[in-house]
Image (cartoon, rainbow, N blue to C red; front, side):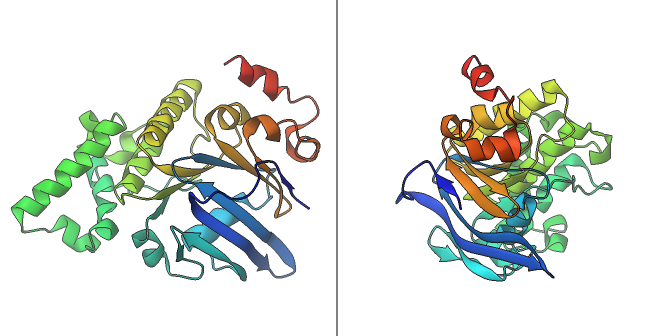
Length: 271
């Protein structure tokens, strides 16, 4: 049984998920999960390890097919659609484990993101003979690199970047799709405090620019201070959904995930 702390789904919801379910043999990894993400918000998805968070993101992005359920993005049904259809519909994602093209430069890694956004295959992206089209693509890619603060490294091999900078390249490449909804699977994992602050500032700017995001993250201080609303999973089921101030005081969430001595409420309130 889940606890709803935010009332009915708002008419402005960009993403509406109903009854999302995925089984692996006898294990139900995601168990009839409902999820509503409002236009322009950062929505947190939290829970213990193995609670079904990444499986949910894989289902939403088409990496996995659901056994049951509906996924509506801007009123378009995406459940069981192939990944290229989902991307073209306005959903982009980053991965828990960094996925960059190690033999490509920083700029080339971002250019890869335009292949679906513009209907080009990868070969065509890198072999354009139309100089104006090529110039436009490169200008857009450089603009994204400027946004994430890496324009000065555009000609550098991506593997020469720090771990945190490679995360930023993944975000820039996802933004090349001009998404309506961006799924972020633990974007802060493995980062030092300065890198975390850099990415958090970037996410805040993206929200100010109107981008809607679903954030999976274990850094609770960041989640509680950054997210507009939060959904909590445990053993594949939604156990609570609502505003951060409500989530951190919900007994079931404290027992399942935060812990009795989490103290998040007081620390976040002082930030």
